[in-house]
Length: 434
Image 1 (cartoon, rainbow, N blue to C red):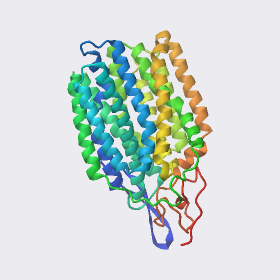
Image 2: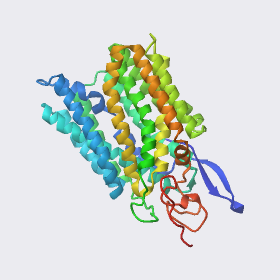
Image 3: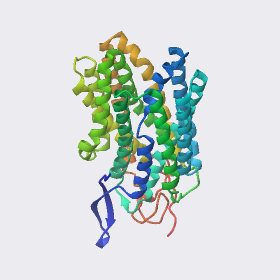
Image 4: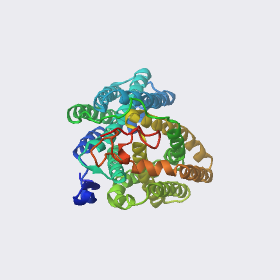
């Protein structure tokens, strides 16, 4: 998989020239682990049918299992940030992937609500931790790949590829479910893939030799970053209210088609249009993506054939999924990278939980009300993110490696990337002589 990006190298006369190059080997190794870990997502897709079909388990019991999964994911997001900041992302990812594999096997073999609930909670927590660890490893790998990388292109390509691989797993799962794969077989297959990803993470990922200038933990206040995280929450509400609500608006066949169209678009969109989108200013890309997502879903709720509207919604979703993680990667200072990502994931997770609960209720009450709430949330998000223009702009342009060779540390030259920690969230450390 070759993903072109811009890399700047020193030329004669101390100038900088641009050339095309693939994503570096360190990022590619992380993406390989992601591809195996998310090659299928049968637990997420088949957990409710698996539990509900078990003898002696009613709908309330199945709902409680899903609640355990959600609570475990939230707990994992909170704990994962601290774990990643205190240890190597490689070890955290490998251990959490192994726990996810064990939990998935327990789900495949389970037969009572307590077993299902405990396994679902463990799976949710471990999955949140390893995803945070791999996101952090991606950001660290950007700094250690050779060359001084154009930050916006590099981050958007790397995290766009990260999300693209996740979406491929969703598409594989949707196709497998459509062909009638059994819930226990699918979940067991997921366990095997996660176990393989754990081995791959421990064998292929390397410790990141990033030198941290300044004291450990001098990461500045999280408060400005949390403002940005809450500004993005309405977009998450739209995403999750959309498909939970469509389940109430559409019959089973229409809903399956909508899910499949969404999965296909999320996979195809980056291949066809990402080169064009990556040339757009970061804030404009967020605004365009949010507008497409909200308007597409609002239209889909009120027409008989929503296929084109679902494509619009999914295209906007793909843009947001590519740009927002890149902003977070640029904003987060190295000593607290996991903590920053955990804060963002927790805020978005809370927004998603509320949207999943409210979506079907609103859609069942009125399709018009459903469309109106989608557009209202979109408008609120657009207004909120406009107030975060500086964070978005600086987050995408924050250099990941200095032309002088310094990696996220102080030096004696006038290079912005030598400032530590991130100049967005905290004051740069004093430059040292040399």
